[in-house]
Image 1: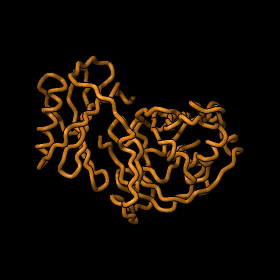
Image 2: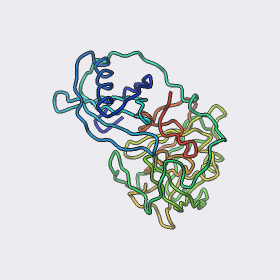
Image 3: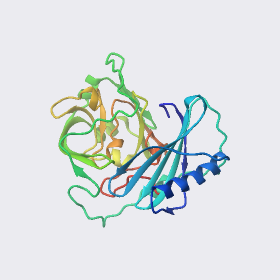
Image 4: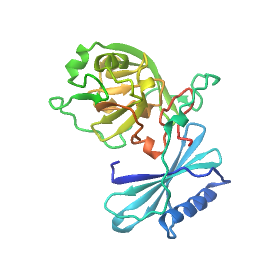
Length: 301
């Protein structure tokens, strides 16, 4: 983690029905007090809708030296389904909890009975993509930049931008979907297909996941099956022009069938791995796969 966060405690709570915001606060305080072993109070920070199914509430618990524990409460309808604590760097916090191992494969169900809509359920169309840079916009020096592709592969490699072009590029016109609920039609991306990368580096049969790291410290994880998709790209152009810095120059992922947080910008490393690792938003409770058609916004187990 970064941005002053040392680790995240993900509380997969028993689903708890609430009637209003005050009940959300009361329930969260009781949970946090048990975790910290002392009485606390929550300061409201912000809230936002995530699609039409979930609301995310953010609180904070003030600590010494101007630091705080961040509290994120995920509510589906009128039910609290998850509480996450973001713990600050530089302070030793004694927590009382039982450790459990998250099993992402329980989330990766296939459901072919989902009715497809336009826009997809929980989305609205906007004219231009919203620009996100949760960890800040990095400085890019192309002389020192390379895209490393490694992990469980026969042919690890590091590619410069011209070398990515040399691998062969294709153009895909697609709709981009953000997990917060907006979508943009007919964005055009040009880049190296994920299938081409797989052909060149030759992942081992044991590979199940693809872990992505970016120049700004961001990370995300994608099931290998979703990376190995005809429309998945390492994009280096957008709408007929080289990517600009706000949209991920010099290279970004585009995985159209997944929500936008999986399409990491400013990418610098792609690792093929056999075991699941949380990326930045996955550690905050977001889904390990994030399929748009299945409305996979948050972890459910």
